Structures are given as structure tokens and as C-alpha cells.
Image (cartoon, rainbow, N blue to C red; front, side, top):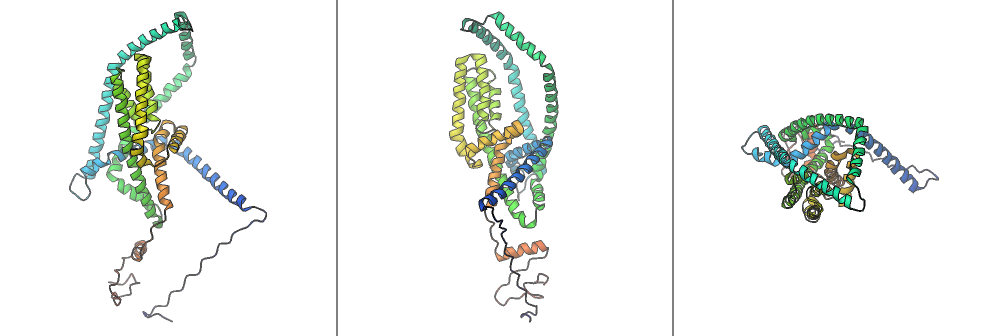
Length: 414
């Protein structure tokens, strides 16, 4: 028996086998479910632990690439302006190079300015610290402790002897710092090269990554990657605005109170604010300590009040309106993520914990959503694209028939 076009009829697909549940007599259902979840969680935890250990071995390479991603998320709009899509402009590699050079110029200018401020203000801070120490010594001598100058000198001598006793540890720490400095230089150049190639050929790199997945999963992977990149970009830009407000608030307050090194303290708070919630508070405590040493407890109390006010503005005004839209993670989850990052990777973990949690949250929410069903034409296009054959044109009218073959035959000429 043949159809109207002379082809044998298609055989119906066999029915899918019905899964048979394995029931173990004497084992309650709840216990079986708990056992299934337990071994899956155990395997996932072991794999995650060893994956973290493996990433730690390549920390010198991975951290600069992650830093480059944050920098690219911040400066990419400048490249898009210099090399717009579909319009005349600079070649994208040249625009990327110009952006990297401008970023280096800005960072180098800030470092030079801060170094100049420290060189000018540090002698004054040292003089004020010495005066504060003499005042503290007199207060201790008159206070209930009755610590005389000889007793203070004895305590200082003990501290010096303790430092000399631990000189081996100090030397090994100095060597570790030297090794870390070498890693910093290596990481700096890795950030430059990675940032340049991400800016100039990021789309090609991402297309290659997507091509590593099966064809049926590429659309979902690409959609998840786009949403992850949008979240990371929003987070970096919002964090930059929050950090700028925090740094300006603390720096201006320190300058008004006459605290030395106001500009370096403001920059320190600006850098620390890239760790949400706790970064600005911890870095602001350094400004309070400098105020205490240089100006006394009253100015230190005023400086502390200024830091608290800046922190409250960040928590109740900036965080909900700026970071709340970008991160969409509960503040408790943010604090726990920062704590876990510090335990696992120190300062680097604290820096990347919140954007990582935000990206994972967005990607998981996207993957939980069902895939959009394709209409027949899109489904046919996907099938023919997979097979590498041209997609036939849809028939127009009920009697339309492509010459040289039926509509179901991709080899026929339209």
C-alpha cells in the first residue's frame, strides 16, 4: 500500500516503555527518597570540593581572567561607542586597544595622585601620631593604671623581644609577600591581554564556548549566558556608583575634619565598597583609626559618625535602588556568600562571591523555566540546520507543490 505521492506510508513510532518503579519490601518510601537525595548530595559535594581544590591550583590564571571580565563589563560601552555595530567607526580591535590604554591612564593617574598625597601627608601623620602617643603615655600615667614611663618602656622592650623571637616567621612572610608581588605582576599582564581579547573578540569566544554543547542545548546555553552577562554588567556598574558615593562621603568628611590622608582614605573606602554591605564599613574603620591617632578621640568619634551615616545611606538608599535590581539576592544570602568566599579564597573570594551568587541565581531561574515551544516552521528550520540541508520554502495555497519533489523532500529544487 502506497500513499498518493507513491511513497510507502511512514510507520508509527513505537510507544515509549512505561517505567517500572522498583519497590523494596520493608523500606519506607520516605527513607528511599531520603537515601536517593543523600547520595546525590554527597557526590555533588565531593565533586564541588575537589573542583574548588583544582581551581585553587590555577588561581594565578583564573583570578586575572575573572578580574578582566569585571573590567570588560565596565568599559565595554566605550568600545561600543568607538566601534558601533552596523555603522561606520573604528575597527573593533583598535577601539579595544584605545579603551585599554585609557583605562591604564586613569588607573595610573589615580595611583600617582595617591602616592603623591601619601608622600606629602605621611610626615604630618607621623608627627601627629608621636604627639598622640606622648599624650596617651601621660594619660596612662595619671589614670588608674599608673603606668610610668619606665613601665611603658619595659612593655615596648618585651614586644621588641617577641618580634625578634619570631623573626623566622617574619622572614618567611616577607618571602611570601615577594612571591605574591611576582604573581601580581603576572596577573596584571594577564588582565590586560584577557581584557583586550574579550573586548575585541568576545562574541567569537562565546560562540565557540556555545558550540561545545550539543545542538539541542545551545539555545538554552546561549540564553543563560546572555542573562548572566547582563546581570554581571548591571552589578559592576551599580557597585561602581555605590563605591563612588561611599568614597566621596568618607573622603570629604575626613577633609572637613582635618584628618590627614583624606584622599587616600577615600580611595581605600572606594575600593573596599566593591565588597557589598561590609566592605565600606571595614575600610571606613581605617579612617576612624587614623583620626584617632592624629586628632584624638573627639574627631575620631565624628569620623565614626560620618562612616556610619555613609553606610546607612548605602544600605537604605543605594543598595535597594541600584544593587537590588542587579543582584536580586536577599541581604542575608549576600552576607553568607561573602563569608563563604572569605573562608574559601580570602579577599578574592569576598570580591567575587556576590556577583557569582547573582549570576548563579539568574541562570538557575532561567533554566527552571520551560523552553519556548517552536512553531512548525522553526522546528523544520532547526531540523534542516542540524542535517546541513537547505530549508524548503513553505507552500503557498492548498494546491502549491514544489517542482522536482514534495515539500517533505529537502533534496527537491524549489
